[in-house]
Length: 202
Ligand SMILES: Cc1cc2nc3c(=O)[nH]c(=O)nc-3n(C[C@H](O)[C@H](O)[C@H](O)COP(=O)(O)OP(=O)(O)OC[C@H]3O[C@@H](n4cnc5c(N)ncnc54)[C@H](O)[C@@H]3O)c2cc1C
Image (tube, rainbow, N blue to C red):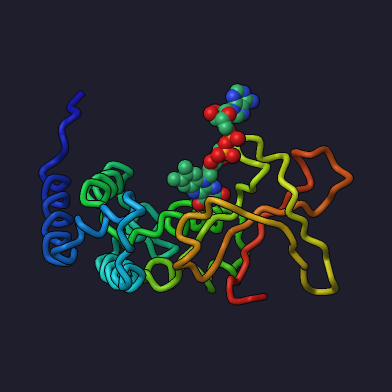
């Protein structure tokens, strides 16, 4: 079996590298440093840089590499997708909203309503809608079944109360996919629902 990348895959890797050479701000490495070193003030335009690069990645079709064509994706192999991830990770590149692209989207492919797919997928592929994940709580990490956030039905809405932590991308995000307890009568690892929460709601 040949484990080497194909010529086409090597070309794709070069294309991603060239894109990052051209598009990443020249002082980007310094900015990454501020994410690790909290004695250095974070770059003020960090969010804008993230969104600008996301938009450009979207135009390239790289935010939907492994998505099926029927959802606006490229139907590429996972190897192509991993090449892309390797390159952006090695440069600490902004713009790749993993929660939207690889966590929320596949969930919508399988369980989403047509309305949810229509509403969200196109914007995620364009790098115009950003998602965070609200699973972990101060007292629910590895043992996620101990989560305490509650969602209570109120006619057509749910009222959600609780506290989440560790939500990567939350400061940039428009939406959050969030776990909340909807049936406290069931065993603790059941009765938990997956909500799509518009972060502009109170
Ligand atoms: C960089 C980063 C980004 C993250 N982003 C997100 C995000 O976007 N959204 C989100 O919801 N969460 C996010 N998380 C949270 C992450 O998923 C939690 O940290 C994880 O679920 C662990 O929970 P905890 O930190 O509370 O640790 P705990 O669950 O309290 O674990 C503490 C320690 O106890 C050990 N331990 C736990 N249970 C057992 C057991 N039964 N037996 C033996 N040992 C055990 C663990 O291995 C660990 O060493 C992120 C975390 C990190 C580090």
